[in-house]
Image (cartoon, rainbow, N blue to C red; front, side):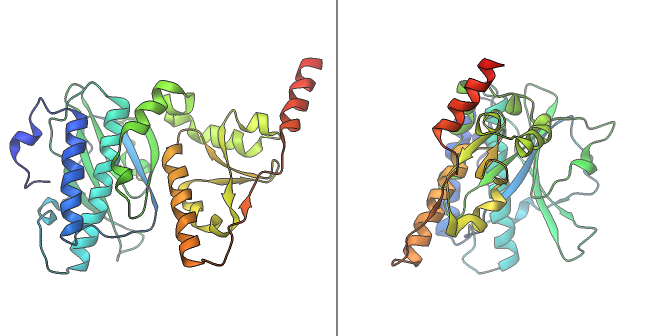
Length: 291
């Protein structure tokens, strides 16, 4: 993003305007063979007090240059960082909708100590009106960044959808906050506890308190597991813990279903529907009233 005009990062630039610029930039990146297809992946976003130490981060902003040449590593880097940027804009608009985009993101690569041949991509994105910064990365780096000097304020994963510009949209997060105002979203650090409650929920009614119930075609169940979807052994249904981008997950399920049908024109997708019925909810409510 360093080759964008400085006026595009002025103090008057809204988050929506910055998202439009990013979409246009990514369309050009796809045309130039920079942005590639990539399997769905969970990215982690954090909002920190102040900026985390940079001594371990290597600045790789120069990779954002257009080129017709096929350089696999550079193209992979661009692809990963563009997806990180989409997550940062979502987090910005979701948590600070009235704040302007005033600081250019700092892109970095972090070496993996456990896997020397692997690197983790990410970015730092400063919030103008508050002494906070959004950190987005491919891996869960909470243990590394959470210390006395860098307190984690918010934490939540988001879904990146393969081969689609829909994951650049930021409206879903705003609607989710306005309509639901979920505890798991307002206080993302509680998501782990909510996931445990969802796992132990004995009835559909109880499960709905902590998760969104989903109908998933059997043939694509393995493809959607990386999105954070879980199977309830007690209720016999797929569910997504609250705090995730439910709209994007549903979009990806539909996208994967259509791709499966395109590759298997003679096959029928068998939806793995929940084994419960409306009676389960009704009977459960009656038991509560009787008790």
